Length: 357
Image (cartoon, rainbow, N blue to C red; front, side, top):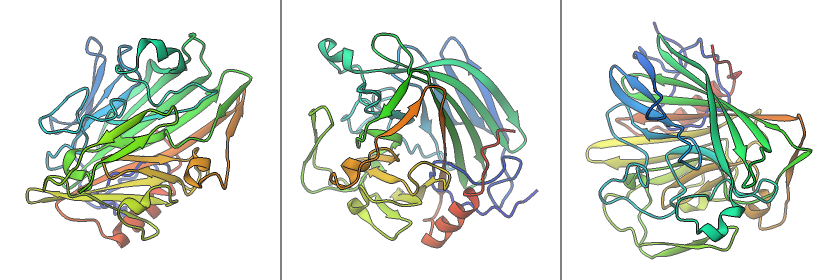
């Protein structure tokens, strides 16, 4: 069984594309199985018995996330730290965990930067995203489906947002794909997503996908906390960005693009990750909070920070109102995904209606 969907394996956040009854890769898809482990608070997604990714949902964590994400050839593309730390990994930004969604200013509460390193005296400024239940979990021919419900919880225990997120997982010989559809519904009179770069749909990549750097760098978050990034000259770090608009390297930060590719070489293998924004998403094409040190994030909310104050969004939801986002992550192993292939993959994805059947 083959499909006209040619998807070059690049990690793309699925925000729209095709119906889940279609196959997104022009080759035979592999058997995908989902299994919940309630005691471990984890759902494993496997392909022919090998781990593709896991959804972590313990209340001891600040938010649920997918970790690790493993390419078709067995290469892990996510940083393990601080949950599954590995030798030689970067240890900055403890709140960067796997593939996740959070935001840094929701009615003045930071849901993005929370981690175990936050001092007790400051915890009243940070919120948590709590798993509520699994709504759907299916292992189907050629794909796996996971739908979950989550609450955004303020420090005082109130819930400003209820979140419903669905994942569709695809796998083939050379590709892995994660489609994500997320709906946020306001539970209080007004929910303000105040403009900040600290967000939103993000993946923290493995060392080899980081960009090489000859000088140390420092980054300041919205709360004024400064994080230092060490020199990164090792041959292991040789990643580079390319946007749908033709922008390369560190210059992609704060630019808009329909899709963003991050690619690198590890050993004899080339891995491409294409992160895709859907035309139905808020503020499309999205801004990219993509850093050379390994943060790869699509942020539709942070307009003021990305335009140097020239434009402001400050998106709001009234009680009962909802907003939905669709993204795709496409990971290709074995060869670089060309600009044309990435564009074709995004075009295919852009017709997806978010169905989880």
